Length: 429
Image 1 (tube, rainbow, N blue to C red):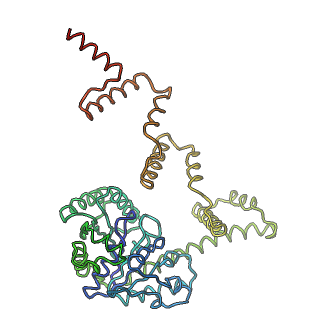
Image 2 (image 1 turned 90 degrees about the vertical axis):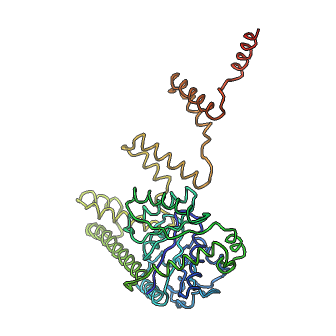
Image 3 (image 1 turned 180 degrees about the horizontal axis):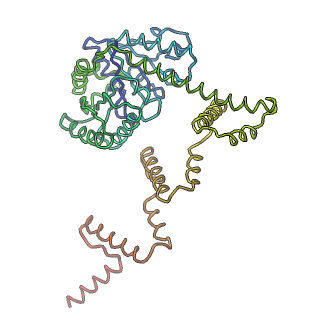
C-alpha cells in the first residue's frame, strides 16, 4: 500500500510544484513507483513544468467515460501523473454511484504505487486542507520570505483544528546552505510549538540554484535537465530520506479511506438537512394545500415552536446551499458580512479597529502596496479637532528624535536655520 505525501504551502510561489515534481522523479530514479497527483485545480503548473497536455482528468473517471489507467500520463523518467484532479474536491457533492467510483479509483492507486505525492494548491481553502488531511505525511514548503512563514503558520493552524497534528514536516527552499535552512526552520518550529503546540520536523532544504529557473524555462525538471546541480543533489538526498522514513508500515489505505469517510459524513448531513426542511413543510402543509404555502406561514411556525438551535442552523444552511446552487452565487457576500458585523450592537471600537487593520494588511499582502498613504492618514489625524495641542507637541518631539537618530543632526526648519545663522554671525562679531 502506498505512502501518501501531501506537499503544500501557505502561499503561492514558494516552489511547491517544483518540489513535488522533482522529488517524484528522484524517487523514481531510486527505484520507487511514484504517482504525482495534481490537486492544484486552479493552475496546471505540473502540466506546464513537465510540458504535457493531458486529454483526460479524474472527472472522466467519475463520469464513467475513462478508466484510471486512461487518464494517467507517464512522463520521461517513469513518473506517473494524474492531471488536475478536480473531481476529488467535489466528492462530497457526488451521488452514491460516483462516490463509489472515486473511492475504488483511489484504492487502486494506493495498491499500484509505492508513493503518491499530492501537489496541493496554496493557502487555507477547505479543499486544500482536505487534501493535506487525507495524506499520511504532510510536507510544508517554506522560504526565508516572512510572508511564507506567516502563511505556512496559518495553514498549520487551520490543519490542527481538523485534527491534523501528526507527521508534519518542513522543507526549506531557496537557501544557500544547511546552516541557513536550520536557522529558518528553528525560528518557524519555535513559533509552531509555542502557539499551536504541535511538533513539526525538519525534512531538508533545497539550494538556491540558478539551474532550477533555467530548467523551468525549458519545461524540463531540474533533476533531469541538470542532474549534477546543487539543487538536484538536494532532491536526490531528499528522496533517500523519504524512501527510508516515509513508510506505510501498517499497510493502510489512508487516502481512499479519508475521502470515503468525508463523503459519507457529508451525505449524512445532507439527509439531516432534507429531513429538517421536509418536517417544516409537512407540518405547515397539514393546514394548507402545498400550492397555498406562504413563506410567512413557515416562519410563523418556526417562531411558535421551540425549535432546536442545531436544527434551525441546518435549515438555514440548506436554504443557503439551495440558493447558491440555483443562482450560482452565495447568498452572502464579503460586503454584506462586514456590514452585518458592524451593525452588531456588541461590536466595540477595538473590534472595528482590528477588522480594519486585518483588511489593510490583507490588501498589502495581496497587492504589495499600501491601501492608504501613511502621510495622508497622518495629516488627516492631525487636522482632527480632537487632536490636542499637547498631543501635537508630543508628536513633533518624537519626529525630532527620529530625525536626529536617522540623519545625525538636529532638525531645523528654514526660519530656524536663518535665525541660527544670524546668531552665529553676531556672536562672531
